[in-house]
Image (cartoon, rainbow, N blue to C red; front, side):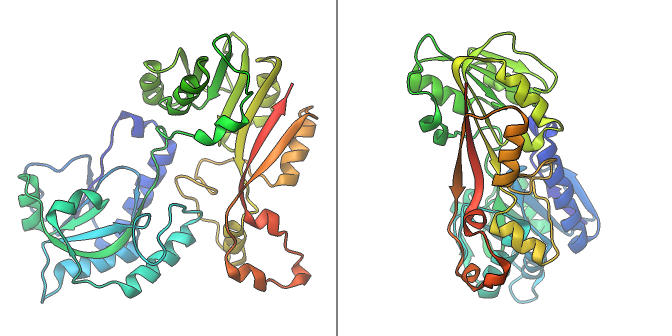
Amino acid sequence: MLLLVLPWDAEADASAEWWYLRRWLIGEARAVFGEVQVLPELPATPPGDLEATLILRSCRVLIGRASLRRMREELTDGESRDSAVYATDLTTTGPEASTDLFTLADFEQAEAAWLAGNRPDEAAAPSGEGTFPAVLLSPAATMRYASGERIPGSRAGLCYEFIDYYGGERADVLPLLPPDLGPESSVLEVGCGRGATAVLIKERFDCRTVGIELNPEAALAAQSRLDRVIRGDVQKLEPGETFDAIIAFELFEHLTDGQAFLERAAGWLRPGGRMVFSVPNVGHYSVVEDLIAGRWDYIPMGLLCATHVRFFTRRTLEDWLHAAGFDRYRIDAQTTPLPPRIDALPASMAPDRESLATAGFYVSIFT
């Protein structure tokens, strides 16, 4: 039996994204270990039928069955019999090190490359344990770990830790906001999380900031940082005031009726106000390649987030804006480098290189 120690708090419990990852992790662990018991922290006395313990640094860590199999093999190897096997974070090391994870296939390809070139005897020092998002412990090492000891071991797996969904700071919005914001101005952020971006705006422009947040725990954290926080579903509430700017990052793809909200939110803008939002592009090369390979894999965050109900390309985004009655807007592409293999696409396919290179769009609506 595997004991999966997965940190879990009230904020994670209210997040559909982290629930999706939790269920996915359990499925991957069962594929390797069979029976899995999940706890939010390591118990003082581990279960008696324990084969191994997998400890994750946060609820945001993705680790799949290929790495779990390799880690299990290293842990039970008759020659080394390591007490601990650590998984390395894709964002910090390996031949495919990257801060971006577009699709699950991206991770699997990087994982395969890393495992193929991995040196199992590469040590993970106890003093560096905190830098590893995942560790697999033998039953004996689990007891020592529970008493506070840090266990040396090898590295034999690859994982990925997603960004803090509710705590991210989006400095990229600052150039898109009206430059004349000031002490008499008011800015609304829809989906403010714990308020990091709104605080950044407040510091830069010395303006009033208001947030709307669905996750009650994240909203509670934001209350001490913003001038006002409204908890609830933005599709069902009214702020009761108007604003000089409204921002919303990666929101509309989660809404069941985004057009209705967009039309309503336009009424929350003061004359001369501006709405700025961003949406992912389903025409990005990573998604297109997945489709060619017969794949469409949801993940907790990103282009194919498990909670997306609407998908956009530039053309569908423009059609959507026109249908909502907006004719004064600007769309800016958020681009990523194209891999060389895209150049091999036949001209008969008429590939749209701009779309393939675009991970998402900034949309600015002017009133």
